[in-house]
Image (tube, rainbow, N blue to C red; front, side, top):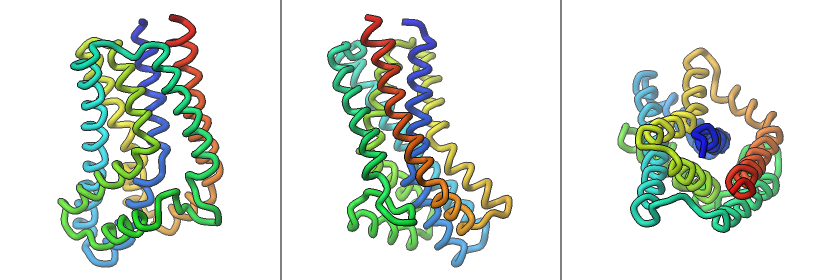
Length: 231
């Protein structure tokens, strides 16, 4: 298979991953709580550790999926198995459009109330870089019902690459997945407030929901066209 196709699938999966909103929401909570308690440098350290936690879990998840495929299967998924993945992508597109955001003029997400309250409490009580790092990993883990299939798609695509290509693809996926929190950090550093950013998220909630759902569908169509039909 041409290397362009696997890299394109990894890129598209990473962009969809980056559009998910749980990590951004928790980061805003962390900012809101920390700016009222700590000096700016301490807040920056907490945020950096939080973003590192997100990237670490994504790195470990994608690395583990690729290792399992290589170690125990030795090859990429068959077209019949990819049809199951495509079905999951379509189901997730529908889920993003219908249940990812709760109703109302807010950015409250699909999480069970107990999980949402736990993340909210942890964000407000985070006072050390270790706690911020674990919070980043926690939010990434809580988003897995929507992102795990993206990681599987990326891992499967990486099976078509050589070792160097796999390392590059892994790095690209991780970097893209943490770009939104990094942009948020830079925006606040440039003078934007948590309130400004939250208003923006509320205003464009519908657009983001539609765009993310379309992304899942496009990824499914792409896989069907280049890995199922073309085989």
